[in-house]
Length: 107
Image (cartoon, rainbow, N blue to C red; front, side):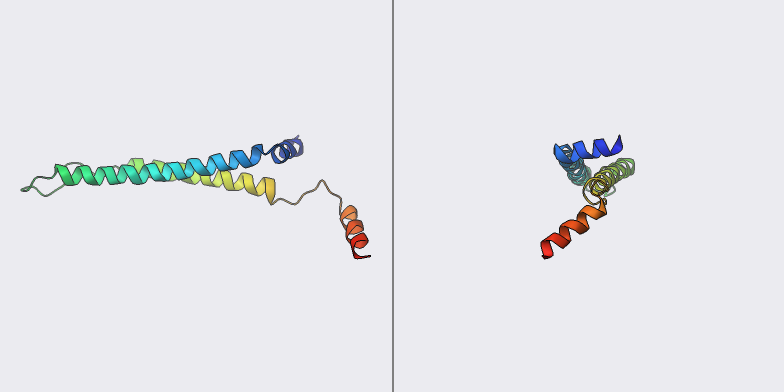
């Protein structure tokens, strides 16, 4: 069952599309987090008064941690899927076939 799923994901390019979508989602999450941090810093610099000098709100660390965990999960899932699909040793080709093809190429 798992080997059939792996074969379908490889031959129909669904696996490549899924890996690309997972990694792009991680990149989008990283860009969104950078934009949110920049937005927070600009809003803090504009909201400071000349006399107080201290920020009016604390940095939203919970959103940063949530984004980092989300990026890590997307990246690890994409890497694991790529490794399973493309870098796993293929058990579908017997080793006798490989040695026979190698010896026929040498002659």
